[in-house]
Image (cartoon, rainbow over all chains, first blue to last red; front, side, top):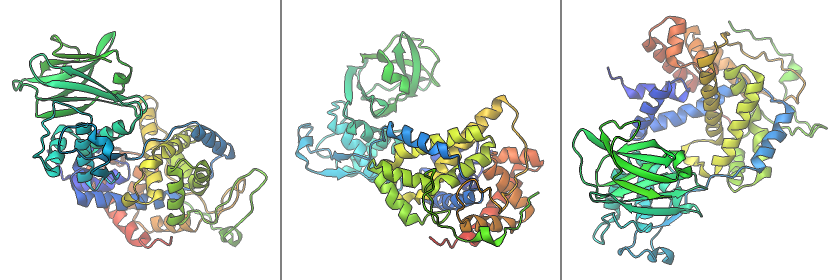
Length: 264
Length: 213
């Protein structure tokens, strides 16, 4: 029995949805401008509600917090990314032409998606079918297809590029297609990019694994054009990342040999 | 059941005091104008720790207050308040003013953390059931007295709600229950709780809509 998700906006803003309900509502929010506005307004009001119970914290807490903050790194701002040049030439990135400044605006998805496309192209990912005839809009759409939770993924990709210690480890899939694990420890993000994968049967799915001693499941994906899969944090400490073909829904442990594997 | 003790006039006036020996910095009002806070947050986003300290001073009563309201336990409330401020520091560079005010942003971080903590805690232990009691207007004087004009306004607005609506908001927001839990505890359908919450929020927005800031 489905219900009208708009009606969850109040409860969401009050923090009164369960974890599952929140996730559902958030994916609705991703595409509902009305609800976005509603939630934003409601949040201003709940901030006022909190004033009703304002209470002074113990004085000692202030120094503890300031001390911890002094030792805590801030998360990077949105990066400035060079838009994909007409050719694949990665060195064009350094020229600063077509610089696309990014905003963190959640309500303006297109720039972030364009940035995601640009990031992927700038990483020189050969598997992506960027060619000079593609305009920015199509690139953004392709990035949207690639990034299943597009806004979030776009930001993750851009924070990856902004990181000083970003690394890309390429590999090929046995039956066709290419993949890359792109990661940065400082950004705390690891992603699997894949393209040109052979289609699977309806009852199959690609599944990624992080391996440190034993394989641990890391997410499933289909062969839809391009893939940008955010890997769990375990990937940052893993020895290798692999992909197998599993039954639809994924498995807890690999049931077949790896079709893709890179050592990190 | 809510009780309010009437405040003696002395406590109701605006107090501006110099820095005390304990080094507690005083804000002039219980809630800083949004524009000042926004300026501070811009500096915080640039890594300015002195600005962060001011940001803390301007907001800590509200943050600690709502966390304490949800968690009830002072020690845990201190921990979660700390977590909230550290997260605010970390994610300040990503704050987008187009999404809302610094107040709203920070309050969401804090309330979420408190709710996450209380819900994971109650999986193992039984949760303290207490009716929400509004803080009396007579405040303990162990800390600097700051005018609570804004707080009073909100408390009064809450009191104008029909009891059903007020209870729903108190249980959901101030105590951190899910709307399902509220329905169970009150023995009413979930739809009823949703309606009460929605109506309550509508009324409160009408009442509190004009914010002086």
